[in-house]
Picture 1 (cartoon, helix red, strand yellow):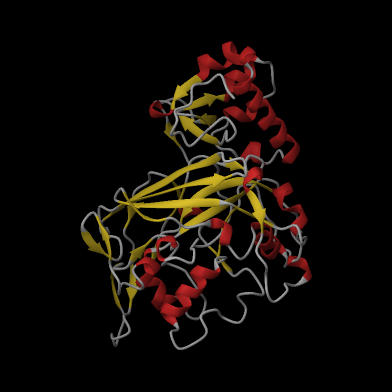
Picture 2 (cartoon, rainbow, N blue to C red):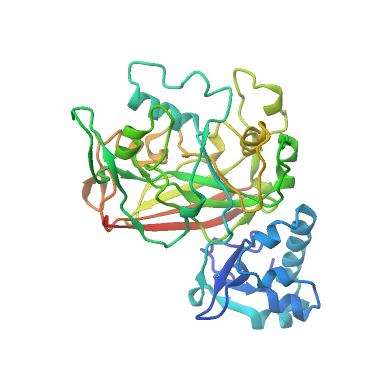
Length: 399
């Protein structure tokens, strides 16, 4: 319950309270919490209550993220009291700002970016498309969370236009590669995990310590140029086909807020190595929705992911690689068993061979002017939902 009026269709109820960075007009960016269709301007509220809230006035979440789990929990408890306790109304109400009046920023300064490949359905679909006469999954896939290092500097905030990338392309029938704009521009529906507490170079983060390092999640669209990717990725993997842009949602939802949506991780066979093993590993019951030019085309389920986020972080650091405040690691494309649960247009159109209808037109990959919006909600046993907001991008022509 809350004394703040929340519209019935709002993504952000009184239990969610995600954090982000906003600005109003020419004012300096600062930290806010979302509730309903409003933003709580946290710095003046903390000041009025004589709290040490210098990090609330920062232009990124990084200083807050670095404080660690006890501070994250204390902040959430404070926020819950602000919106539940009528006695806080006089302190909070003057600092409620309609979301329509703010401009959201990239929520944190991204230190490093790693992208995983954790959906068995997605990996199997891609394997069938690219290796039709072989086993869909490569031999290592069920032994470790496959991933690659991306480009932190091209992670952008939701609403940033995406310029169509150019690069080398070579279709199977072509004798030589050509250069030009990507003709097979795609999306990937993903969940991104935001690291707060760093680790020491040479150490590793155990699966049990996941929540001591990771604050929360964002929605993520890993834009992908499939023709550039197909020509470059052998033998070293994704590079220019992935590095031009990755969009994330402006609000970071805490793992603590999402605890009611945790479900047991599915069975992993064969058994994983000890550093990845834990009989208490969990997943999240999140359902995404993908809108292509405003039309719903897919609803991927996250609860079916094969690898857990704790295992991703453990594998990322098992060689002694350190994690830093502001690190972002992503799940890889989220896809389900059904066609309408596929998290990329590569899969939805089955490599371009089976067009889907969008706004009355047959489509395969993205055209200039197309806009894609990804939203998501987490389900809880009590029947309530926790919104994760949305991430949007529009395609502009190549330069």
